[in-house]
Image (tube, rainbow, N blue to C red; front, side):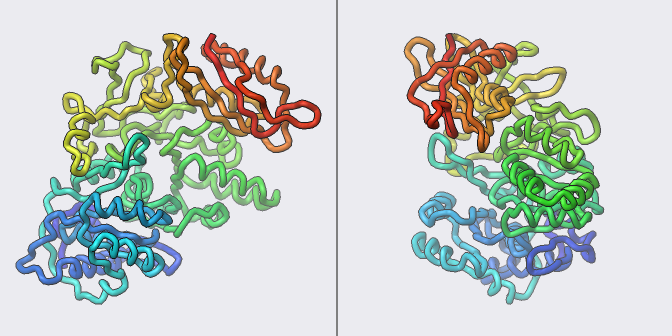
Amino acid sequence: MGDNGLPLISRAEHFRARTAIVDCEGAYSYDDLLGASSRIAAALLAGRQNLEDLKEERVAFLVAPGFPWVAVQWGIWRAGGIAVPLPLNTPVAELEYYVNDTQASTLIHDSSNESIAAAVSAACGIHAYAYRDMLSRAPGKHPEIASHRRAMILYTSGTTSRPKGVVTTHANITAQIESLIKAWEWSADDRIVLCLPLHHVHGIINVVSCALWSGAVCEMLPRFDANAVWELIAGERLTLFMAVPTIYVKLIAAWEAASPERRAALSKAAANLRLMVSGSAALPVSTLERWKEITGHTLLERYGMTEIGMAISNLYRGTRVPGSVGRPLPGVEVRLTDESGQDVRAGAPGEIEVRGPNVFLEYWRKPEATREAFRDGWFRTGDTAIVENGVYRILGRTNIDILKTGGHKVSALEIEETLREHTAIAECAVVGVPDAEWGERVAVAVVLCDGNVIELEELRAWCKQRLAAHKVPTRLLVLEALPRNAMGKVTKPAVVKLFRH
């Protein structure tokens, strides 16, 4: 078979006998992975002569997390195609959009997604292939694939329009992996569990690709289950764990629901992991502190996005600042700019711009959007941050979380973090509401903890005091009638509004 110039796959040749993946069907070696991906590539290349490759044909795949998912991704790459991993449990119309937008020629599916894949392929007029059938092909030689070639298309969330396809090359992916390998000190002795979806860089790059680059073991769950994750942690074989804040909240709830003896055992096992990471969304300080109480770990927060992989990270060895995302990763340049593109003064907020080999190539078939995303070679992330003592702290999305009220810029995330300090508040969300006088009013939706009630005047006074302490000079007013119990107290959920005055 031989390798075909792809670093991630070439490295697997050195780990052939080692376990690569463990899923619900069993354990698979790196040799198994090389063999299966070679068969997938051979099936995709059927009928082509003289090592002709797919020439960047897009190949979509709808496969549950596990060994088959990786074998398909690697097979597409080894055949010279562009991998388009599709999200599971997604409406057919949305999947059709991804397939049609990428102009995919083929859709690969596993048995659990056969019916939905059939509907999508029929609607889009493309070939659908079952993973198990493709494995019947004999493995063979594969074409050489240059590092500058396009490798993958992932779709952004599309908050203001239809999702855009983010195109990364093999060189981009290699740079993203190598940066994290160095920063987080991955090795072949590591073992990690995947409980994240595999249509985002968090799961694809940070977990699966970093593990397989290192010769480590990746245990892959078909979906997140708090008790299943705790069971794996309790097995005391994992060395790393990575998740989003919501998962940590659910793990905390599962731990709290366990018996005292079970809690003690879980905490002891979790403390033995060498690294735990949180990302993809802002991590509430209260969640960070509670996780540290349970496990002894200060979660390592980092910053990244589909277009750049990871760009900023707290230190693996060193002090981690709660509420911050740390410093630029190896090989990544970061700067903060104002609206005119000039570097901001020290200590002032600015838009994060990133430059480096990790940055994506283009938005698929959207040259104008691609041009607008860059300024003088720097990618404009659309996120606002501030640097304090050399450490970056994210203030939020520039056009969503940064509220302009009364001539001032206010971070919705900072207000939310302040409100969560109240013992009766379980969760809250802050948004800006257009206002003729102030530009924007600051609106807050508050969910109280179970069994809690709170007097509105008490909430007003507390918010005024705490926000002033955080240098957010606002006062609280009632916009509309709030849910109340028979005693006249505000109950869950309560909706209030903050006004700058």
